[in-house]
Amino acid sequence: MRSSRLKRSDFARPADVLSRDLIGKILIHRTPNREYRARIVETEAYLGPPDLASHASKGLTGRTKILFGTPGFAYVYLIYGMYDLFNIVAGQPGSGQAVLIRAAEPMDDWQADLRGPGKLTRAMHITRQHNGLDLTGRTIFLIDDHTPPPPLSITPRIGIDYAKHWKDAPLRFFATDHPAVSGRKGTPRPRRKQHL
DNA sequence: GCGTCGATGGCA
DNA sequence: GCCATCGACGCG
Image 1 (cartoon, rainbow, N blue to C red):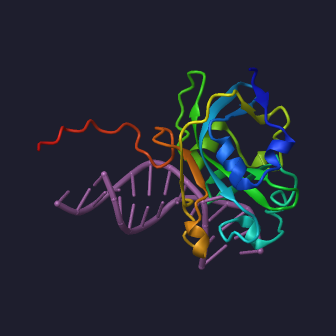
Image 2 (cartoon, chains in turn green, red, purple; image 1 turned 120 degrees about the vertical axis):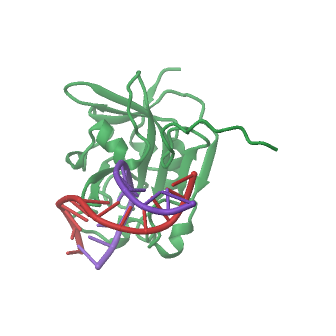
């Protein structure tokens, strides 16, 4: 079966559903110089205003305006003064939901470390300049190549301990045991065999 | 291998 | 004064 681009109706599903479905999909960024392709291995869902971990819980502001817009648009913001994080607006228009892309595996013999949301955007040259970009366009978009989805693990989200009970919600999705998920070491040091 | 810490800037 | 991060550092 031929690869197909994700379209508006794919993005318009609830963030937790989309988040799960994006594992294994391919993220592409076309620049004038080259094309970056990577297979997504880790995501997180942010469920809109009631979700205290979501920027949407702050209401409609200059920053969250994109978040409360049309699904399938890029929401990219600066965190900790130095990293741009890439999100995809999800759900019904105006629902304020989004999916954070946390890690991916580079394709096409491209050597890069995409294990973490800050490292991923830096390596793929995704910046705040892309905030508000339509992901059904020709610059940054996603495709489904119909590779069977890998086994999934689901855990609470990372780095949101301030979010009261929402910190425990199982909204982080990743390919089980995949070497490219965030928080892993580069090359595990060879382990000495244990004596019994 | 793991906990702690600091860089750094936009936002409300 | 936060903060959807990351890498450096110290420990023993």
